[in-house]
Image (cartoon, rainbow, N blue to C red; front, side, top):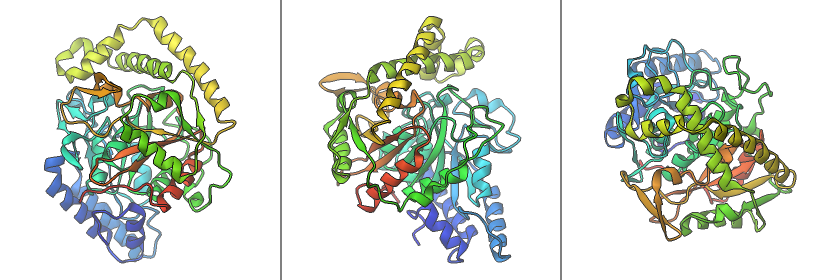
Length: 462
């Protein structure tokens, strides 16, 4: 087995069947991190000793005939806004490095460990999760494994790049306006933003509470489904976490998709993108025999309202530190938080009113359509430090516009999977599969068909 490119499910099967030990898998992951991460800058902390101890425990359980869990021996890492017991939670910030270590794992970390997965460290991100590039002035930029001169995307850039580079097969990130989907697309891996509230955020440093989601990055649809299944379940530590019973989505992956109504997002989602990004959507549509288009009304206003709400909520969360220690923020983050603090309150209220209206409009669409497909990003990965790009003949800023197609969907908490598309001698791109709330199983069924057809697959640079 090639541990550089094997997916998590394959590794777990091999560990459970004794083909390879959890210790061997973990040691191999730690060696890859030591050899490659100096040029990638995915990790801010590597928990080698604890990882090897956990791997030894898994091997001992297997030797005793115990069930080690669905993800037995699978190395994983998490964006450094997830609490890890004994480690200070940075959330990409210099200020947070002064905080005491976390006293317990985030719920999501604990659930993956309970399923036998082995935590090997914490991953780089944009400060306070406010960005789409992971160019962090405190901890450095994370480099795209497909081209080290380019960004990995953000704010979960370390999470996506670590999977794409073959360092670990599974990571966790967070998504406010596209922070899972954007880096998944730019790095050529799978990234799931579940329904808002579907997975617990307990022990996660929040950016904008009414938007924030957590979710997995992985190399296959099976991995995404398995990780999602393990992470599900209500949690009293997170007041917005659903009480909806878990649905084991991995059992639906082999079902056909006959009768599922699929459409292409038109209008707003067909403009302002490079031809390659739109061609990726068409490739998926052709594979699914889809020609119908659907209009998501006022998507541009949804994006604008998302900007207002996240800026206000983020600024409010960090207002005291902005007053006391503005010099210790990443300048790009600080300036956007300060702008958010100056937004009139009636703008925020109006944006929330619009949010309710927009949710009602999308609900009506999903009464007729099951799945909508759309581009994830308007371009492939830009260069590190690149400030502007040309779209539709107009020069626009790179950072905010990488979320052009993700923000309107985060706005009302829809479940979305970004699936990777790549052409020969080209950088990866992503396509979003979008469904009504709590329909992750449906999205994963469609993705599984596309994977079986060879239309989508993760691109691991080992």
